[in-house]
Image (tube, rainbow, N blue to C red; front, side, top):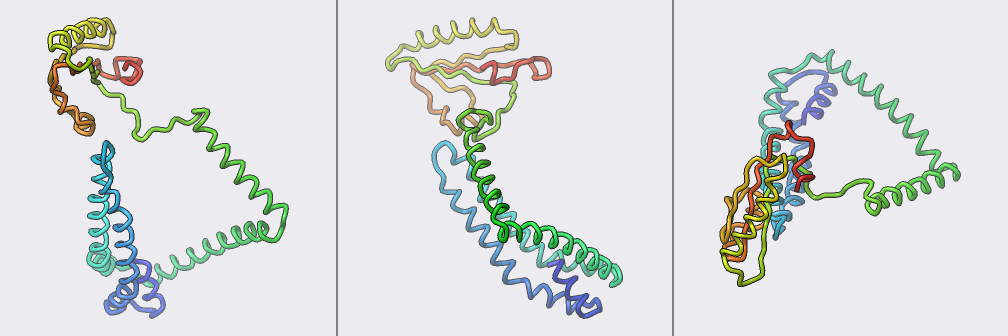
Length: 243
């Protein structure tokens, strides 16, 4: 919207509100279409179910709201502020000349580079072979684990949980006894400052517990330990390394 308003002012060689309105009208339909295209691409993510559902759901909702608000801002706020802070025509001309100069430099660079790829076989084949080699090298990193791949980043938290699943039919006392023995072992770790035990019931669940439905763990054979660690600035190992 901004670029088209400036372009029309340069063509008309004058700054007027009517020209700005007409410039917004020119780009109105494609801007609306582009916005709804992005929204349509985001909406299917709301249908993701299972464990990743709660992670994915905010993306289409917040993304769609942001896109619609940006569309509203482009048609309402942007033209208004352009008129309020309209630069003089001589400034627009300088900006236009600078942009043309940069465009010529970029055009000459890419034209000379791409034309060689099409017109000179050795450059074209070298580029193609290089792409194929780079592709397989990047794919091999998954196999060699040179680059760790994870859906969510590892976070160094000050707490983590240990889930215990005893055989079905285990008495609550046996589950509690097993959790107590596990807690005694964990207390020997220097990073651990507190442990809470939950037998036959779920601990107060966090976002991870909400996603994994840990709040449904209510049988006598199920238990959890909540381990509290010292602050990450006071320990050398991360919470994932400790776990």
